[in-house]
Length: 265
Ligand code: ADP
Ligand code: MG
Picture (tube, rainbow, N blue to C red):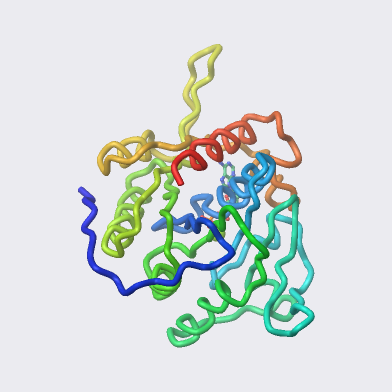
């Protein structure tokens, strides 16, 4: 059972032009963390919030693909800061905008320590109500650097329902509890889907693991998102469902997620 174990942490700087920083995390890769982060950002922007998205997955930046952004980031006129790109009202920064096209980067510990803080502080966000940070999977230097660099209002934890994902995700939650960063709630992705008409249950992995984890840790289950091929297609096409198909089931789920998150930060 993950219990918050607040520990004194060094005073972390507030970023002056950002009201709240919220991380999106999972202990496991491939559970839809970036899909959730991108659609949540677009849903918050559609609701009128000034939103930034920092793609901090230094090992596999995916915001450029999911948002259909292929440009390079430019510096501000004074040359001191980096200008975010904008998609669907969301200001976006990703390592993908800083590297030469098609080039992968392997960050060593020291680079993570120096480079990631720069992604937070050297970007000209221009005043945000919320900055969402799409973290890499697992528990690594990047997570520690993120938690040390800024005051995180909290973490949204994404899990698939199966036991393997839940166990990895629980470890991630323990790490943030250790860093005195609150978990704002759980999003269960790839959840079982029950047909309203015939009652049939379609599931990809296990069932109800996210709900069980949320109950066990004592945090809300913020959303349950079934496996929906249209969601994968929209990601590949670079148009988030919240923007491309705002009346679809996943879009309505993300809009609800944005509303409940906004009420908690
Ligand atoms: P992560 O950031 O955790 O590695 P991604 O958001 O990149 O995961 O998602 C991994 C893949 O799964 C992507 O191709 C994405 O489009 C797809 N995907 C995520 N969630 C769903 C879902 N609910 N239904 C269908 N496909 C999904
Ligand atoms: Mg990702």
